[in-house]
Structure formats: C-alpha cells, structure tokens
Length: 574
Image (cartoon, rainbow, N blue to C red; front, side, top):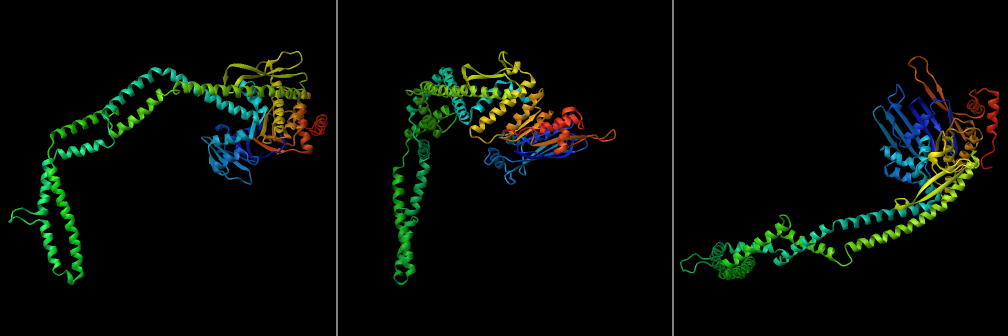
C-alpha cells in the first residue's frame, strides 16, 4: 500500500503531506485546485515521465517523497534490494526530484534509474484514468483482463504456451533456413570433402613440421657439424702425434694419478679424486658418442631434397586451407571438417532432425493451446456473469457483457483465439464492441465492474497480493443512483485492497474511509503564485465539502442535509 507522500514545489502545491487510508481514500476539491498534482506526484514516485515544466514557478526543484509498504515477500522488494535499497521497517522510501533540466530517482536511500521505479510501481499500483478507459477498448487489454480473471494456474498455463510457441517458431525458422540453404550446404559439403581428400593424401602428422625443420637444418649443415664435433673430440682426446697437444682426458688422468699418490693421507684429496673419477667416466662416454656421431655424419643430398619438398607441401596445404595458418591450424581444420561432414551426411540428422523437432513442438503447442482455450472459455462465462452482476448494481440493469473468443487461423503468441468484450447497454440492444458502442460513463462503469469482479476472483483464487488501485475520475459521465453504486463498488473493492479515488461526486466521496480535500489559495498581486493545500476533512467539515460538491454551496441547508444522509449509508458488506 501507499502510506503517505510528501510534495514540495510541484505545480500549485508548495508543500503538502498526504496520508492514505489502507481502505478507500477519496480526493476532492474545486476544479483547478490541484487534485491532478497529487496524482502527478504519485505518478512520479511510480516511475512516470517527468514534466520538467511542472516545477512550481519561483522554485528550483520539485520534490516528491513517498513511503510504500509492499506485502511481505513481494517481488518488488527483491527488485529494490538487488538495487542496493535499504528498507525502513519493511517499507520502501521512494523519492523523485525534478528540476528544469533533469530528474532523479531514489529508492531506499540509493540513486536508481527511473525505469526501476516504474518496475516497482507496476507491481504495486494500478492507475485508472481516462486513458485507461481507452485502453479497455483494446483487444490486448481485454485479453489480459480475461487471463488475469482466470487465475494463477491459467497464467502459468499461458506462460508455458508462450514458451512452446516461441520455440516452435524458432524451429520452423530453422527448417525454413535449412531448405533455403540446400545449395549452399551441398557446395559446403563438396568443398570440405575435397579439402579432406587433399589432407588425407598428404597425411600430415602432429609435430611433423618441427621434426622436418630440425632434420633439414642438420643435413644442410653437415660440414659445420662435423667440424664442431671433431674439434670437440680433439680437445678431449688430444692429437694422435706424440708431439701434439694433450687432450682433456689425458690431463684429467694426470690429475687423478697425482691425487692418488697422497689420497690415503687426506679425506679431502680422496673426495676430489672420487669427483674427478666421475667426471672421467662421463668424459670417456662423451668422447665415444662424439666419435660415433662423426662416423655416422654423412651428407645426404637426396634426403635433404625430400625434406625440403615435404616441408613445402605441408606449408602450401596449410596456407591454402587455413588462410595462411600453420600445420597445427591445418590439423584443427581437418578435425572440424570431418565433424561437419559427419553432421551433413549422418542418417536422421540435418533436415530430418529439424522436421522431427518442429513436429514435436507443434504437437506440444496445440496441446497447450487447447488447454488455454478451454480455460478462457470457462473464464469468459464466469467473467461475463460477474460483470453483469456488478453492472446491475451500477444502475445499468439489463446490461450484458459478452466475452467473445474468435479462433485464429494460425496460433499466435498468446493462443489460438482473439478476445473481444462486447456490451449490450440495455435490454434489446445488440452486443457491440466496447470500442464502438459504449459511452464514457458506460466505459467507466464497465471498467469498475471489471476491477471489482477481478479482485473478487483473485481473492477467491487465494492470491491476497492485489495492487493499490488509483482511479482518476472513474465516475466521469455518471450521476444519480449510478454514482451511489459506483461509490459502493469502490468501497467493496477497498475491502480487499487499498483504493485511491479522485472524484467530483459527493455520492462517491461519501463512501470514503479518509476524505482529502485540495484547497486553492490565490496570492495577492500581479506576480502572486497560486498555492494549494491538502487536508483531511471529518465531521462537519466533511459534510460541508459534500454539500459543496452537491450544490456548489458549502452552507446550503438542503445540501448539508443531503450530505448527512449520504454519510449515514449502510457499511459496505454489512
């Protein structure tokens, strides 16, 4: 519910604090007093678009603050908490600041986008004004009203249908694209098969390019390798001539003999001797390996030519098939190509799989649609009966509402039928679409009858999370006994949830649990700014306001007596 709002420098309101009753609150006042500004302020708190020109003349900014109390566990609390908002004893403190150049929104002490306020407001408050009456004429709004009336289980069914309908359309699109792309797929298959034939003919192996490179470098530099190895062998073994230089092996052997002469007398020398002996073994092994290497090292021009041709073949294949890639890229391309060819040629795949999936989803869609249609047919009868009952009480005896379901040629996003509300305003009148045959006053009463009927259905369905309803002159075009019944129905709706009404009719205002009056005070002087204040009226003050609404004269004895009679009405539901 909306506990209160505070308005500063918005339109004709300089400063006002408004507290709303949990039941029915009515707002009245002279034409032009500023009732609209109360709803404008409320609209700002609910994420409505800011009219920057609404800032009060002479003020820099307009500020609207509110305290919203959602039911425990309500979805909007999760939305607000995810945005970083803090709760004040379970309540959301909401603020909107509007200047001549921009507007800002805050929830729970955190700055948030205007869209977040709109998301919260959409779940908490339903606003009905003249524009809502126009919306009631739309097929979309009528279908949504019928689905809401049908209850939570029906809405779950609608969600399932919408999901399977969307997936069926995607599957149909995929099959259509498959059929359209037949030639392209055939060309792709031929291209991939030819590429794989070339790859299979070459038989590239992982790491082969590096192995070929290493072998080619060795064969291409045989003389350099031989010279290096022989030089190393000479340095280790020494020259064969008696007068030649001694090699490392000879010198190491001399060192071992020198240490051995005294190693028995000192542990350090023995350790050195052991370490040099190990080096001697390694040096001897290395010398043997070098000798074998030099012996085996031979030039092989034919093998080198083969290596060059093999490397060129692999490089050319990789560059051609992978747009300049390497052997690794070529092997990855081959794996992907084999997988794609398998997909394009596998039995039961391709078009057959897409067609089977489309058939499955089509059957599921028709099954869900049949259940959805059955639910709407049942709800249409119940809704029409409930609205007819309400209309009879709203001074439209004999009026009949028909909810017509027209089958569609093709399933749509919301089912296999279009929904249309028809109204026969009086006995003998032909049913006509709401958008063509209903006057403004009749639309007002039909809308109210729908809301009351839907609220009752929602309560009966076990859903106690009705939104706050705000009605802006829902009684337009209504008078006499019909006005009394409009007030009675609003009070009936307020038994289930909070209702806020802006009205010009005393018959409606008399049913309020809290009566707020917007009063205008004109300033003095040519540059004076009009100011409006909002106050709660009770007792004699309330009778005087009702008398003003009845006759235009708050002091009229006859009007006061009539006002008193209105306030003595029986309590709704008693």
